[in-house]
Image 1 (cartoon, rainbow, N blue to C red):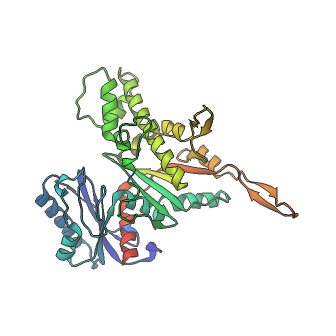
Image 2 (tube, rainbow, N blue to C red):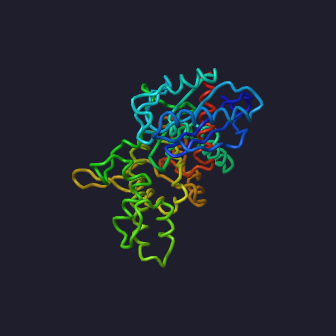
Image 3 (cartoon, one colour):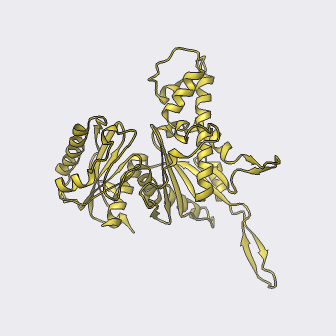
Length: 365
C-alpha cells in the first residue's frame, strides 16, 4: 500500500488523557495546522462535544471532502466496533461509550479507531524509522534489511504496537501488544508501567531526594535536576532515570525476544533518552542465569542504539563470512551475530500516530 500517492483526505485525532490533537492528512502528510484541545477526560458530555467540535473545526478548514475519520485512543477497547471502554486515563468512558458509531452518525463518514501505540508503530513502519533505517543500510552497502517493528510510547503510560511486514498486528480482541501489563523482574509485584511512566520517575526521585519538592513535579523538572551538577539531589534524579531505563530495558528484552525486529521509542519522555538509554541497553545486552548459575545473554541478538552514529556504523557492518555447503564446492553467506536496533522516533509520536491512522483508514476502506 502506497499512502504517499493516495490523494484521499482523512480526519485524524491523537487522543491522550490530557490533550486531544485534531488534524487532517492527505498523501501521508498533514494538510492543516493541528488543533489542540483539552480532553476533559472526566466529564463525558464535555469530552464528546470537544471531539465533535475538534473534527468540525478541521472540516471547516480542509477544502476537500474527507473519506473517513481515523484516530487513536490510549489503552484497550473494542476498536472494531468503535466502543471505548474502561480506560485509566479517560475515566469518562468507563462502562462503554459507542464513540465510533456516534461520530459516524454525526459526520456521515466511516470511522476507524485504534490503539495509539498500535498506530504509532504503524506510522513508524510505513513512514518513519523503518524505511529510514533500511535506506541508510542500503546506502552503507549493508545486506541487512528489516521488516518488523515494535513501537513503544513513553509518557503518562507505557504503550506499544507491533507491525510485521507492513501489517499492523491488532489481535483477535483488538488488544494486542498491551505492553504496559507485562511483568517486571525488577519489581515482580508490579506491572511494567509502574516502572516505565512519568509517575515512576516522580516516585523514585521523591523517595531518594533530600530536598522538599512538590508531588506534582514533572519528569522535565527531574531532568533539570539531573543535569545540574550543583544540585544536591542530582544523584537522586540520575538514579530515577537509571531505574526507569532498567525497567524499560527489561520489558523491551522480553518483547524483542518474541518480535525480533527494530524497536522505536516515542512519547514525551524521549527527550530524556540520554539519561535512561544506557541503562536500557545494559539490560537488553546483559546476562540472565540458569538454575546452576551459568550465564547466558539476555537476548540472542545484540541491540544497538542507532541514535549514536558509531553504533549505527557497527550495526550496519556486514559481519557475515562464506562457509562451505557440505558435499559441494559451493559456499553460502553466514552471519553468526544477529543484531537488532533501538532508536528514538524522528517523526514524533503525534505525527507517527497520524500517519498510522491515515494508513489504517485507507487499508480498511
